[in-house]
Amino acid sequence: MIAEKPYFGFDKCEHALCCAHLLRELNALIEQGQNWASDMKKLLLEMKNIVDTYKSDDKTELSRYYRRKFKNLYDLALEKGKAEITLSSTRKKSKAENLLLRLEEYQTEITRFSEDFHVPFDKTQAERDIRNNKVKQKIAGCFRTESGAEDFAKTSSVIGTVVKFGNSVVDTVKAIFNGNFTCFA
Image (cartoon, rainbow, N blue to C red; front, side, top):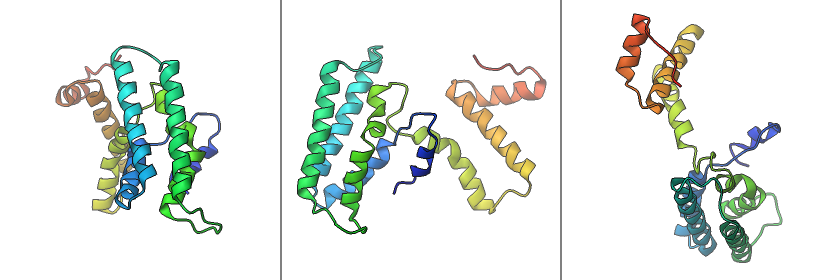
């Protein structure tokens, strides 16, 4: 079971899985001598590099050649994994088997970044956006009031948006306090 599994209950949207997390799991298996994991890692990184190249060339989708190539290599890595791992007949499965099954079941969600260039390879930016809230909660134990939590969330949201637009946080905060703030476009 994966941490994101409950999100798949939302059926009115498309989902994507974070490849950075998958790479960490694959690295652990590579250290244990799982050759198929090395093939899958190389493939995901190659896919990312090609997508990044296409994006930098202002292209919006992969060529038919790369789509076919990546699909075939993905399937080949899965087959190699099935041959390398002794599949369990019980509910208790090894980490390698669980990852292999996840890579097979969620292939579309894992490779979505190569089909839709708006989808990032990883979700590290989203994790960074909530990290301050978790750190504040961990250090303080909790927020004293609900309005304090809301104020913190609003402030964090404004700062995060300002940074994403490449504007000065200090200038924006000054503009807010001076009543000269205008929304970004």
